[in-house]
Image 1: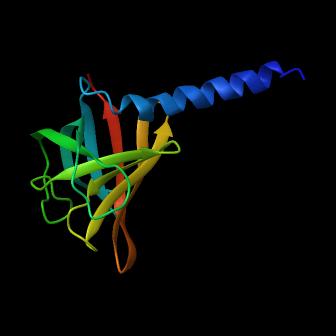
Image 2 (image 1 turned 135 degrees about the vertical axis):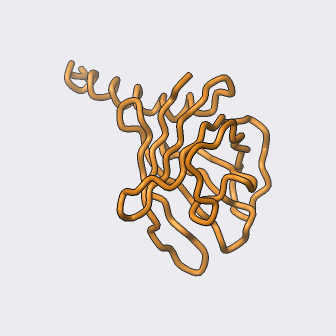
Length: 140
């Protein structure tokens, strides 16, 4: 069975987008994290790095540690940067956030959109509540 050129192109573009998430796990890259509230107001801005070190988590699965390199705009009560943060990548989706406060999780979940990863910011415990949105962009 022959695969058409447009199908190959679409598959190639999809793989390129997924590579952004896969490369998020490389330790040598810094990423600009921006977290906005429901009114699209910037609440948190930081530079982070994805570590390969395993992180503690109340959630199932393999979580790895996020290292916060610098903090810019910071609303600690909105999205905490001071406590431990973790991430995991599954099926092209990146999830990062607070995983050590059982039933008080704060998750940023998104997929690559070109060179940026964008998605939702949710509080998860005995239910789920959308708190805002986020973006991650590789800066180094």
